[in-house]
Length: 206
Image (cartoon, rainbow, N blue to C red; front, side):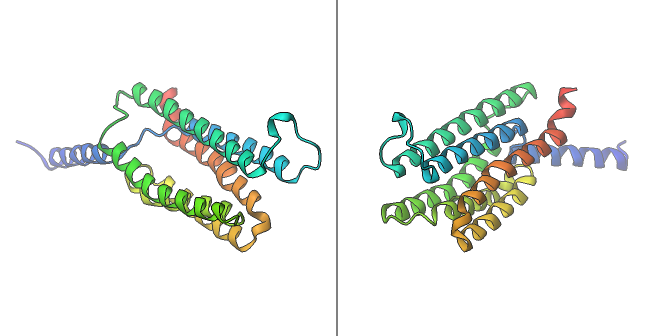
């Protein structure tokens, strides 16, 4: 005959299975650290393109907006590749599948605010209004993280709130937009990646 402890254990196991089916918990902390470093490198390149008085190499000759767009796309592509590869490696290592209901819900809830933010930023760029690019990136990215946090680790929620706050500061102080962008996409990602690694990955690697 089952005891109360047996029933409680079964309930905990059912809850765990339901959580794993609706949440994606295999995000790589190391990818967050690397993405943060990519963002800092991108910020440095952008700063040189915008403020440097030295004649740039031939590769950087041309329209500054196009150059900055190219840098941003390179950083985005490198970040996506890094996140997918390291998350896939961690997922395989833990014996789980990278494409499951939890990951689908996570991507959907990330994609909607990011798509809206991308359209918003492109509209401003088309009108030659650049001071809202950094705030727009930070705010919509932060909202995407807040929106998707319920389908992964809750640390994502708090990182999203920080990104939104930095975006608001960047809107209030346009001259600090590049600095806020570096802090949000660079330093905050590095801190987040270290925290995630220490909490969820290091014990599995020992």
